[in-house]
Length: 190
Picture 1 (tube, one colour):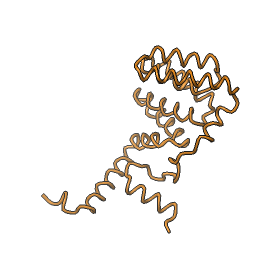
Picture 2 (picture 1 turned 60 degrees about the vertical axis):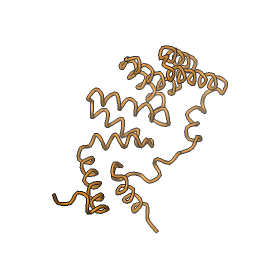
Picture 3 (picture 1 turned 30 degrees about the vertical axis):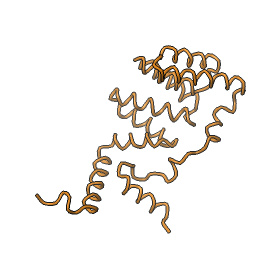
């Protein structure tokens, strides 16, 4: 029977882009119960109204009406300013409009309101990490991705690998070595 460590080693071999030391089960769905705890403090009627506004905002953004999306998310924030989710969603819309500074302000607020825990925090940290990476703020991006990875984001862990050239090189060499072991005739002497 394989131990958790054995499974982690096998995952690393068969998925070379996964960082070493991957936590078993981290990518598994934690279920809605964990995420619903974020909203437990809010009045159900108001929460339902705010969620509906956020869904309208997402639909508007998907249809290309980013201004309407920002309006819906702003209305959700006006109704329930203590809830992190709408700030994260509005940040995405602001970023689509080219308002990176506004997006960063909303992401900072979302992380603060969520106290760095839960789905909204995880999504906000990933989004902020991506913006910081585009701004060549690698250390800040790495910190955000590390926090998001601890909250369960597989995407954040992938970004951490990309930010670590030694890890990426090691994983690439391991992948090439395994490829040569599987197909010794390919890549032979010239």
